[in-house]
Length: 118
Ligand code: 5GP
Ligand code: ZN
Image 1: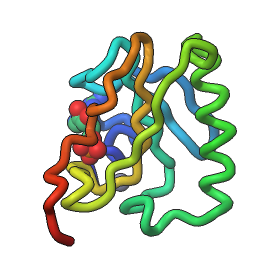
Image 2 (image 1 turned 180 degrees about the vertical axis):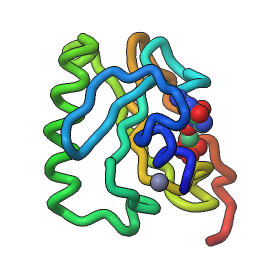
Image 3 (image 1 turned 60 degrees about the vertical axis):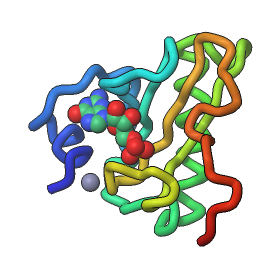
């Protein structure tokens, strides 16, 4: 079972912020901003490459509810999902980073070698 599936099962503790039947939001253990939440589907999906449109539609509603709950909807925030090796995905369970609570620099998670190849 992957790390985030263990968090869903409660085998690994997490600081939960919001959940419904399909998603769980909890605080990142190593926050990169004053608010740094992770939103994960309760059904394991490896990455954004595998997610279907129905799950994305419900993820959108869940994230909109979450950012209102933690009061960053008006001040602004960033939604990021890292995919695969070049994207810097360390946990192979789809997750959305929700970053806010201060003015974010453009550079968070985006540093890249512009001459790189794929
Ligand atoms: P990725 O690099 O895969 O996009 O993001 C994985 C995120 O999960 C990282 O920001 C990391 O700090 C977070 N993380 C890893 N292990 C744990 C954990 O056990 N608990 C929590 N709350 N966050 C974790
Ligand atoms: Zn998983």
